[in-house]
Each structure stands twice: as C-alpha cells, then as structure tokens.
Amino acid sequence: MNEVELNKSIKEALRQYEAGIQELKAMIFPADYYMDIKSLARHSGISVRKLKDLIRHPDYPLPVFKVEGSIRIKKSEFEKWINRFRLSPEQNTNAVNHIVRDVMKDFQMST
Image 1 (tube, one colour):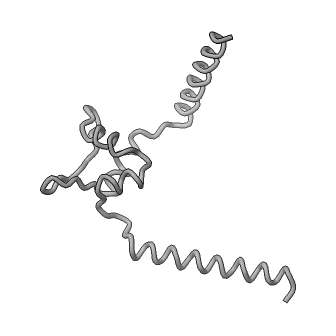
Image 2 (cartoon, rainbow, N blue to C red; image 1 turned 135 degrees about the horizontal axis):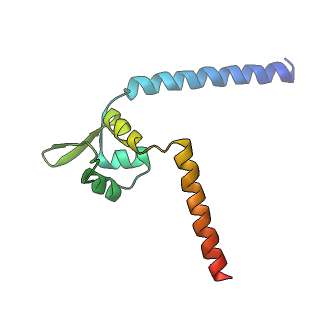
C-alpha cells in the first residue's frame, strides 16, 4: 500500500469513526432534553449568574421550570429563546462599526 492509499484509508476510517460518534451522541443525548442551570451555562457559554439574571429579564425572560427549588431549562426552549437576540448581518456590521468608532475615539483621546 502506497502513501496515497494509506492516507485515503486513514481518512475513511476517521470518517466512519466520527459517524459512529455522532450516532452514539444522538442515542445518549436526545435532541431535546432538560438541563440544570450549570449545564446550560456550559452549553451556552453564558455564566450562571447571567442566566439567573436572564430568568428575570423584564421583556424576554428565559423560560424555565422550577421543581422543588431546582431550575430546569428545556434545550429547545432555550434555543428558541436565544434566537430572538440574533443579529441580522446588517445589525452585526453596525455593531462592529460602533465598537471600532469607540475604540478609535478612545485611541485619539489618549494620543
């Protein structure tokens, strides 16, 4: 077996391995499940403190279930909720431009 064939074999083995991992994940972690607030923090990259603040958001509170003092969040409901905050490409560009203007203004003030 030459080097090219070996590389192809390795790539195919890796592809099959990754497909198997994806199948296992789908079996172990169903598409929709409940998370505690720490799990949601790991999943979303948002701190536990910020998530607790978002539960009490005046306009768009994070939907949660509270069972005997334990907070649970359904993954699909979190995904639906957070998509409200998605910026359009135009809004994203405007936000970046605003940040650049602020940085440049601060830079000019310090020189």
